[in-house]
Length: 429
Ligand SMILES: Nc1ncnc2[nH]cnc12
Image (cartoon, rainbow, N blue to C red):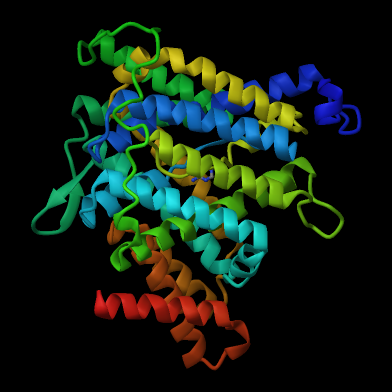
């Protein structure tokens, strides 16, 4: 039956190879069950319920991806998208988390429709490559700033906006230690580096009396505080349209970039460099987002960490199904998740930042008209503390610079329309 479902022989793999790959991918991305509830709790959501929603959304996404698209690609609520949810939509724009969940739900529905009618490909293809790298790198810098702030390494300053905090404080030292541990373990080839680092720092927190022991395993907490709590009524208001659009937009880049990166690593692309069954993969992604919003989490997306499992030999959907089953098992470690302090995950945020910034190597740095909008996008993301605003400013600067330098051939209708829409939004609020 496994053979029939996943075509193991045809893909030159075996149950054992897929199981090792699944475990590898799970271990590299399991940090999300600690980080996501912590981040969404900052938006006022219930920690336990978000923990359950995170595990279930990830499990469901992985199972659909594995069974429907037969790809070794795992899904979970995405970093960056969760920060956008908490710090921009709820924190800065002042929407309730219920409304923000409604926007995530709607963006998932739009994503599903776009995926089915091929408009998605047109939109993604019209985004200049350099801006795609700039956006990914900017999200990385944004996550790094969140980590540094949560560990007290970077603090506010009335004179200089930001300054160095007390780096000899316990949280700051532990965050730094966690970061160094991840880098050292990853460099030494340890697949579970991130989760080990989180656990080691949490244990140190316990030993130094900074963390309260709550137990390790128990039945999952109630999901009731977030289940079906999304507010769809205000999503139809005009002011919310830009939020739905922003979620959709960020997810579009995120998913396209991730799918191509994982597929390239796994040799899953066809001779024309396209991903066969891409529609099914995108359907899995959007259905997971829709269901995740109903359960109580920000956008669920395909994870770049799937490359770890692919490097370990994962070739079929069986890898994703195994990751999904492990996320279901993770439902029972909620006491551990509740114990993990923010400084234990700060190093993870910084590490993800490094991964997301690495794409900058592909930018044509000798061509100022390409490099300038990239730097605008990625630098303004942490400095404006907003993913959406920085994407908008990136598009506007790309269009302006290309127009002023007469490089009209680099422009297309998609770029001009997006730049104009953001310009109108910035001027008229
Ligand atoms: N938003 C995201 N996109 C791809 N991979 C991720 N891993 C963690 N967050 C991610």
